[in-house]
Length: 368
Ligand SMILES: Nc1ncnc2c1ncn2[C@@H]1O[C@H](COP(=O)(O)OP(=O)(O)O)[C@@H](O)[C@H]1O
Ligand SMILES: [Mg+2]
Image (cartoon, rainbow, N blue to C red; front, side):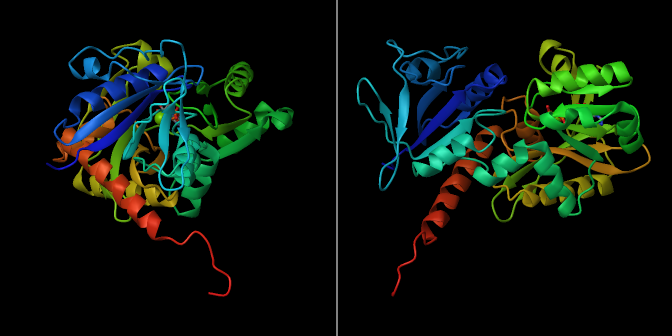
C-alpha cells in the first residue's frame, strides 16, 4: 500500500481574517482525497496559540468546523526544528505527528506575510504556496508595487506615508499628485480593512487615522475607475494562468462591508465577459506579476480594467480565499481544473520545491 502523505492544515490565526481562514480550511479539509492524504489539523487561536485539533476525525466525518478547538489544558502546540526534518510537539503529551507538507491556510498578516513560511523553513517542513520573500513582498503594498513598476507592470500612482512623517502631507499637495477622489490604505492589511475612498479634506483626515490604526505605513493611491478583474496563477518556475473572473461590488467599492457583512455585497462573474485579447493580456500580466515578486505555488492577481481600455495591476494575494466558492479555485474550475485536483497540484508543487531546495548547497567547505 502506498504511504499516505501527511498534510498539516494550519488555519485560524491572529489576523482579522481568522473566520475566513476557518471557512477556507473547511472546504480544503472536506475536499482533500482521504485515500491519498492523512490530515493533521492545527488551529491557531486569535491570541496566536497553536492547538492540535484532537477531534480531527469528527471534522472529517462532516461535523462543521466553526472554530478552533482549544486544547483541554490550553497547552499549545509548537514546532521544533530538527536536523533533518521538523516535528510538531504537543507540550503536555510530547506527541509529535510527523508532517510531510503544511498548507498554511492563513490570510493576511501572521500567515500570508512570510512569518509562518519562515518558521516552517527553519523547521524544514515543506509548505504550500509562496516562500518567505514573495509572501512578505506580496503583503506589503508599497514593496509589491515597487516590484511591479520595476517589472514594467502598470499600477496606480501612489504616495507612501510613514507615521512619523504624516504631517508633511497636506490635502492640497496630495490632490495635486494623485487627483481626487483617491484611496488611502494600510500597506500591510487585507480584506479591505482600513481602506477608504477620499473625496474631501475631512474624509482625508479620517482615512489617514483609520489606515494608521492598522499599520505604521500607508499608501495614498490614485483612484482607478474600472472593472475589477481577477486571475489565478499556479506553478513554480513555469506558472500558468486561469481564465479571469470579475467581481462587481454593489457598494461604492469592494469594502470590508461588501466582502463580509453584506451577502449581496458583490456579484461574481466567472469567467469574466471579456474579449479574447483582454483575456490573454490579463493572463500574461498575471504571470508577470507573479514572477515580479518571485512567487511560487499559487497567487490571485487583481486588476482594474478602465472603460478607455487600460489595465492596472491592483494587487497580488499569495494565500487567496480558498472556500469552494472563492474566486481562486472557481477560476481554476472554469478553466478545467476541479477543486480536488487543484489541491493535489499544490501539494505536488510544494514537494517539488522542497526537493529542489534540498539540492542547493547551504554551506561552503573551505579548502575542498
Ligand atoms: N486605486 C484604487 N482605485 C479604485 N478602487 C480601489 C483602489 N484601491 C482599492 N480600491 C477598492 O478597494 C478594494 C480593496 O482594496 P485593495 O487594495 O484590494 O486592498 P485589500 O488588500 O484589502 O483587498 C478594491 O477591491 C477596490 O474595490
Ligand atoms: Mg483586494
